[in-house]
Amino acid sequence: MSVIYEPEYRILVDCLKEYRLQSKMTQRELAAHLGCSQTYISKYEQCQKRLDVIEVRKICASLGVSLTDLIKEYEERLLLGGLH
Image (tube, rainbow, N blue to C red; front, side):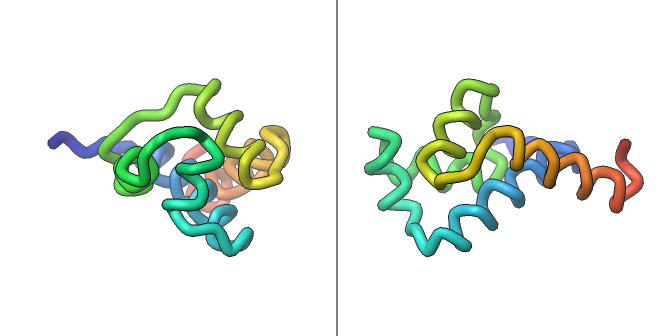
């Protein structure tokens, strides 16, 4: 399996995973909300699957986070990491 190595992508995935953990939702629970398998969640959290914006938006909605808030957090982390 290939791993998506770009630091920018890792930051995005970390944001999504942290929002999931903050919501106290397991991978299995998130998968049930999205109508997919737990493996799907695991693969994107391990950067083995690249998400598109539609998928990210659905994940955000399931976690009760706006896409706008996710992007703001993502941009802040990029700046902090010197990856603007």
